Image (cartoon, rainbow, N blue to C red; front, top):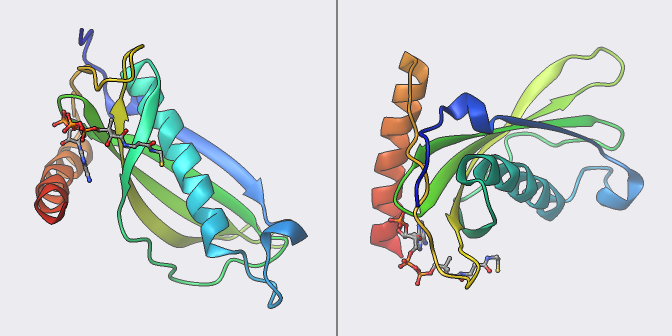
Length: 155
Ligand SMILES: CC(C)(COP(=O)(O)OP(=O)(O)OC[C@H]1O[C@@H](n2cnc3c(N)ncnc32)[C@H](O)[C@@H]1OP(=O)(O)O)[C@@H](O)C(=O)NCCC(=O)NCCS
């Protein structure tokens, strides 16, 4: 049963990684698939915080790599739930690369992932609604609804 409504702040996650040699290609850039894996994990934690239980990834939107993330860079991922539907949530993830020398952070990727909450039998289960309070949260919520409509149409 859905319980108390939650704000996007209740689900917020920040995760930090360092690009070690095993995550990089011969050019010294991080593998795209590695970053997608970090995005999936960070967003899943945000989804689980909102849903208060186990979730599975049902969709990750196209991920665009805006600039290379280099060996030795610090990668900071920030995720939160943008909107909660009946049994699914959309999470937004912002990925920044941080220079270890200057500490300067650059926006590298924005990604959206959808998760479905499952019950003990592995069936989709209803989740708490999201309460968007600030103007920014309301904008994200409205945009998430539009993206969901496009996703389900393309399914
Ligand atoms: C997630 C899963 C249980 C959903 O099963 P289903 O039969 O599609 O269930 P439903 O039709 O009831 O859909 C459940 C929810 O997922 C949403 N959904 C389904 N496909 C979607 C897609 N491609 N994009 C976004 N949302 C989607 C539905 O809209 C519904 O959300 P709502 O209740 O909030 O409206 C099933 O697809 C599954 O097990 N997938 C594999 C998940 C997994 O193992 N992921 C790890 C990577 S392999």
